[in-house]
Length: 336
Image 1 (tube, one colour):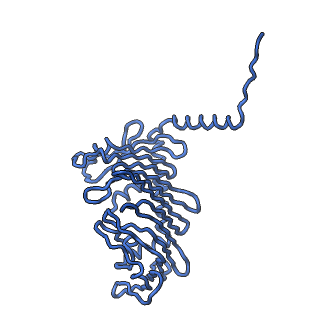
Image 2 (cartoon, one colour):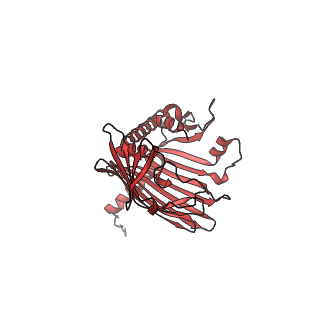
Image 3 (cartoon, rainbow, N blue to C red):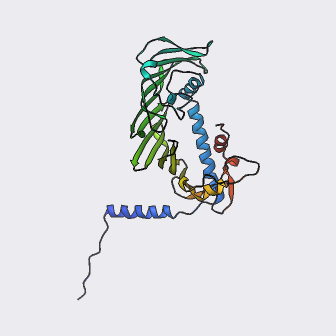
């Protein structure tokens, strides 16, 4: 007697799961890109970065804030000024003492308080195609001293007005625990952009695990996401030491995965490039298809005394990024 087992039919849900598994396996095993195709992705990424930087720099908020920061001795906490807190600072900014309406005296090149206020209000000239006045308002600010010889803001509420229009808002909430920053959440909205960041520091005995999630949005569309994780300790001089650094950055059309083990590196070595490459991995992939583009390595370059990152393609040929990517040229030539 022959027995015929009924044929099992897959449900739609099971078929979808199988399809997704196959898709993920295909993506994971996708072919590495040839050199010329890899260059196309790098140049496309370079173009995206340069266009984004140009758009952000041209916003009225960005231009006005740079002009404000160029004026010396603005009555602002160091976190909102051109000179962030230096190591050794211990006295928190007194928000109540600095409340008032300030105007800029061009002759004396200084800010003068004219009347009292419940906020810090700074009027300054905004030089553009249509010269006008700008007003930066801080409605709330508080910071705490930490055991790391630095000050950490726990509250910031501020906005920028040009003419009669609010062109930027800034909100930040943070906390300090056991003498170190443990959390922070910030949102900066300006023009069509929204910059958002979330910071968490999970404390363990003798070290902490920091996670920083930064994203940039334009017209409610995410154009950049960066997740940074790091194991940190406190050095002998009470400074933060980043022992490991793990980053995942996504921006069209590239994804970068980076890991640096600073704890294993020899800080006294004279062969920094070799030591860095030995304890680091920086890999580039296409964002959508997950195809491998190449590795980033530090290499020696004749007549150059600075760091020289290079892309190593799948055929083992390499090219210095500064030689053909404009964004890298800009970064490498920034004066610190």
